[in-house]
Image 1 (spheres, rainbow, N blue to C red):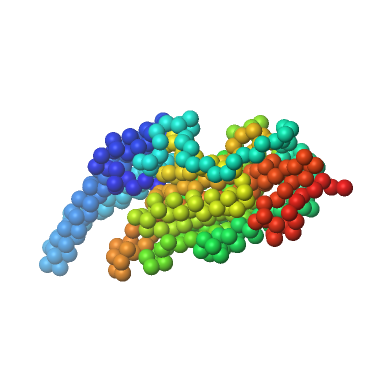
Image 2: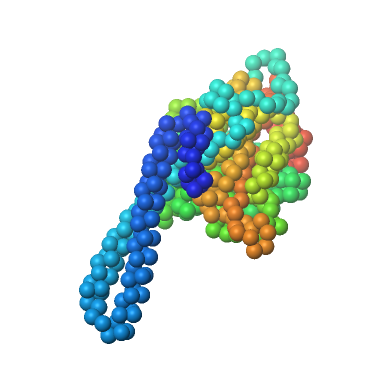
Length: 427
């Protein structure tokens, strides 16, 4: 959530930042929040004046009553003043709640480094690896997966519905191997603490990281218990420290988690629904970092590089895309997408987003630290990256590793985890 106190002196700066997103609805929410904030401040000034007058009148009332004077008229005046004050205080709470509801719908300000424009202005900052050449057109992953007995998408649809893949046999082992490989890498080489978070989160948690209210329609909800299936483990992991004041010496905090994730993908019906390209349930290893504000840019470079290491160890050609302001996610200030080359689909597929949220999530979740002992608490900065998401990584492994005989060569880093260097068609 943006700091309204910081933008009050010059709202035009905030409007210009939001305008870079090209989101007229966000600007309207911001303007409404500023209007309500101005009304709140006016009522607050009146409330504070009335409180001061009430306190003085109460003091005079006490003195006169103690002196034995008639205080009937003054007592009536105090009662009327109290009723007026109560009404104004109710107005104040209403304005505060309305203002916050609009602020919760205002996205983060884009970082100065983010290019201007929409998705067409996204910038490739680097590439890694060389896409393979094939003597014959490479097959798409859904053909390879079925021939190799890795998944049964039809039966997954029967069990739960479209977008809920069923991995079988060597496919299930590949998923398990990917999870163990990534967790070992991040915990032993990158210094992350592994956590196993709840798979359901409450409203405060979903609001803290920015999923609510903006993405209500994309979340699966257990309505009876007012809990949400996590769309990404960023939500529960970041909220571990909600409403806490952290020890500055403990920063940066680095946590990783492997979980299934659930997303309705509202509005995406009919888009890239074949195979594993766009699914409602998927596995992912997530990276979350919490740091001092002055360290967040360096931490962003670090977490991006750590996600890249996964793709490099898996020998998968990828590119790093710096997202333009108009294509940056709601809570993010600056994002790098890691896109894998999928030769069977002849396209690039996003497998990770590495984002810095500055203090946006920390304000919503009230995560603070003391810069020095006894100092006033300040908000931390939060960052996260997929380290990495499985479906599109599996797509890239299958399509890049396919051989003419129908087998798929696995990257060397996975061999100890999967128990074979090659997936072969079922007999």
